[in-house]
View 1 (cartoon, rainbow, N blue to C red):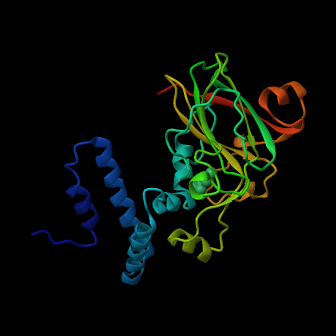
View 2 (cartoon, rainbow, N blue to C red):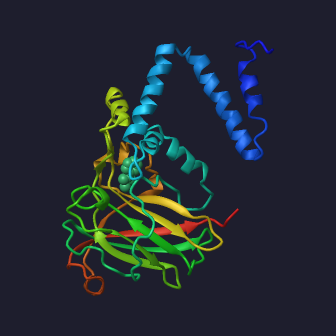
View 3 (cartoon, protein in one colour):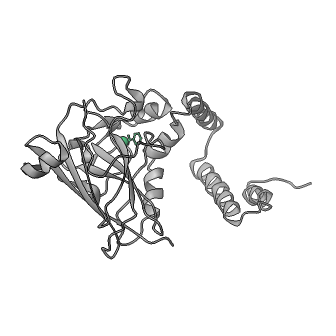
Length: 285
Ligand code: BEZ
Ligand code: FE
């Protein structure tokens, strides 16, 4: 019989996981036990508080569904998602930022140079960018997965007034790594607050706004995939992102432009906004 005490409990629990075959998994579980126990010890966690925490997790599970993960949202508002992005950063590469809940695989492939505006209201924007490695060499085989919200702030998945796949696409870049897309200016957006994460934001008197942004995933053979966002410099929420995704290098000016040939080529009106989007990918480790 082993007498479990405050002195030996943590080590005993850690040992109980020592048979996990995968070394990395074993390490993660060991450190999780370590930090969970340290949290409870440091805070002197009471039975009532422990029960409240478990009930919070239950409510998170109840509101989650295949199209809504309250757990991801909790990770986002606690800054954990952002920390994982920052830990994945590589010198010289474009910085990553949160994936968010509105990426769905299988966006329609469109030609580079497409116009996504169709029936959308909003300010027309031209995005022009170039995908290179960290030395500036073009990555001719790069692909871009792009998505954003509509002028009413909503993503098509949660807004019946929008057609399926509104304002999202995948494109292949040109041989010189360049790409361009015509779209609309994204809008600031409220993260869902009707669940337990909303309760947490309210008791903390925290705002639920995300500053206006485009999402992109950039992939190229032999290079680390990049999940990131591009923020509108003029958005007042850029300093107060509810999910801590803003990095100075990802905040871009939306500059007034009126190049007639470009407007004609891209199906844009005479006056539009222009956003420059250089992307640098690091080599695979
Ligand atoms: C978004 O980018 O849309 C988003 C990101 C994190 C949580 C909620 C929404
Ligand atoms: Fe988003």
